[in-house]
Length: 233
Image (cartoon, rainbow, N blue to C red):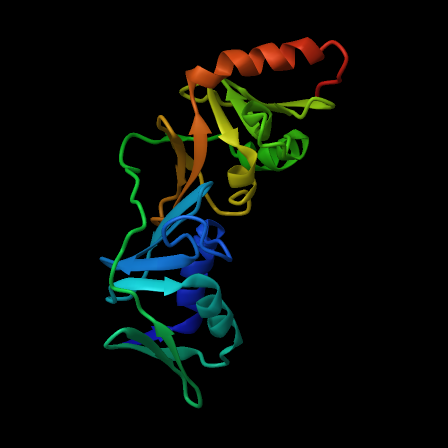
């Protein structure tokens, strides 16, 4: 099948923040193709978007991305030869192992979405810098989205960024996941029990690991102790 190289590359890049360089969990280093859709899944980010491909199977992500970036062709011919994905340009032919067994988990992203503040991802980029990387203190590794503001602290610094729109629920979002999607064109949101889903009207959905009420009381307690000695923004 013929496909525009830049169009395919753009679709894959839009969900590439959910691809790890090494396999951490089931097929986390790969793209899963099926039903004219591509999916990715890491510990912190899950992604999906439509692709104009009719192939079914799993391809390791980074080698495919690098090949598509380097090929000079405007259009490519993609085909499946047994257990291989064949990518062919005018002068080059590259093959990738196509695993037919899909073990990547699939999360439910369906539901009612609400429009987020246009400043949300700008705020998130700033606030993420104050979150901790110490995984033994899970709450401090998160950005807290409470009503009309984002906040974070790492035990040494604290920041709050006010937003003009309220969200639906009080939620903690792992900053590693949130940081990985801040440059994507997303404007809608749905908050679930373990994931927060962001999407746009073009079919791109990116989800970050999140936590609800069971962690919030501890977060408020920890941050409340330090607010007297740390500035807010």
